[in-house]
Amino acid sequence: MSEELLSEINWNDEGLVPVIAQESATGRVLLLAWMNREALAATVREGQAVYWSRTRASLWRKGEQSGHVQIVKDIRLDCDNDTVLLTVEQKGGIACHTGRHSCFFRQWQSDGWVEVEPVLKSVEEIYGKK
Amino acid sequence: MSEELLSEINWNDEGLVPVIAQESATGRVLLLAWMNREALAATVREGQAVYWSRTRASLWRKGEQSGHVQIVKDIRLDCDNDTVLLTVEQKGGIACHTGRHSCFFRQWQSDGWVEVEPVLKSVEEIYGKK
Image 1: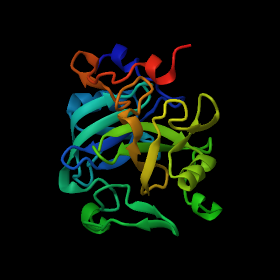
Image 2 (image 1 turned 30 degrees about the horizontal axis):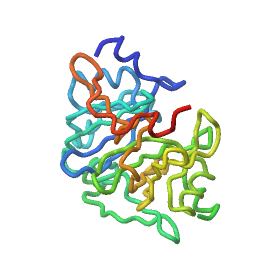
Image 3 (image 1 turned 90 degrees about the horizontal axis):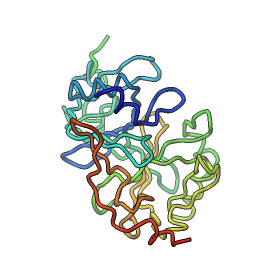
Image 4 (image 1 turned 45 degrees about the vertical axis):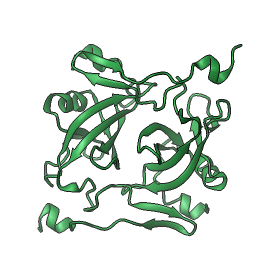
């Protein structure tokens, strides 16, 4: 991905864009993460989702610890050039660090946010016990 | 939506969260927009997507000019409490202000970003000629 094509993207003041990951097999929206130029270039080059971790301030190769890698099938850019949409194959069927399929597991109901999706694998099992 | 439940959300420094709108009928991701507390409360109350326009710095009742209203079927919150996912019925089958079904109409190909979706209705037809 050339510098010129990265420049078409409207990076925010922190040099980032929000990135939506959608699962190809199910159509489920799995997560929203962020990328900087380096992360997007790495994603294109490696064919796997590489995000920018804002908390760790470093590249985050999705699945590097858990094995829950995202194989990238399609990359889209929106009309304002400020959001990216990835279509991915989610390895292990788990995108969320809580062990759930999708990060969007809380549903608004009249009395509050309610967890509506099961934990498929415990955090201990995914990341190993200390 | 009570103050207490709005408080569960991790609003960013500008008091906003990114919101993904996904079409219930097709599973297509239509757009990413932003909400503040007032917009989310209005969305819940009215059952239609109300965003916060960062460019106009005002509430944006999606479809107020175009008629391309989004009827809200489901509201989800992610594991970090900092992204909202709406499942919507997209009136008119057009979410994008360019007259396309989805805002994500540009696809990354080896030689650049390529428009891969048709304009279903011209901007003049949607917003009226001046």
